[in-house]
Image (cartoon, rainbow, N blue to C red):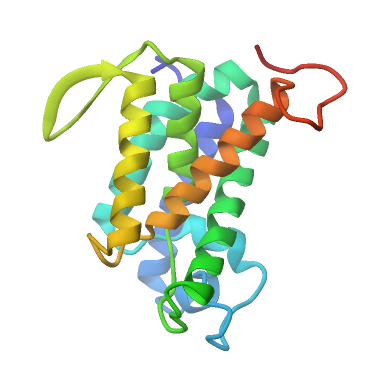
Length: 204
């Protein structure tokens, strides 16, 4: 983690905290900004983005902002601020889209809204594992250092298992996986490793 946060990471932290304070003052803000299922009658296109700046409680906000603080700066310095911003929003948008698909076609849930930056945060975790694969990470409840690439794969498998089996209900596991998927595709594109390639390779 860099000693000084770069501008986009700092701005995202501030915006998320300010939006949470607005939620506390105006609870109806969540009704407009949360990601509602397509069949709910409450869905609006802007929710694909706005839901990622709202949170379900202080602990939800704290976890996501801690992860943004820990990983965001290093990734922003590695990608550069413009690409970091693009990366963050691609992750949160893909996370929202996958969540909508899963709610409609697999869970058949037309009533449960989704909020939180977790999709983008999981995209950042994926980026950290790809850009700094040998950096050591560990879980709070399992203080065993492991390389970032292994940490990311393990976390992704836990999310997939939890989503498929229904463990830990109330958590948007597929949004988390969507953020990781969006991030992986974008990083591979920038590295020129997909059939459709950028004009010049942007990452090693």
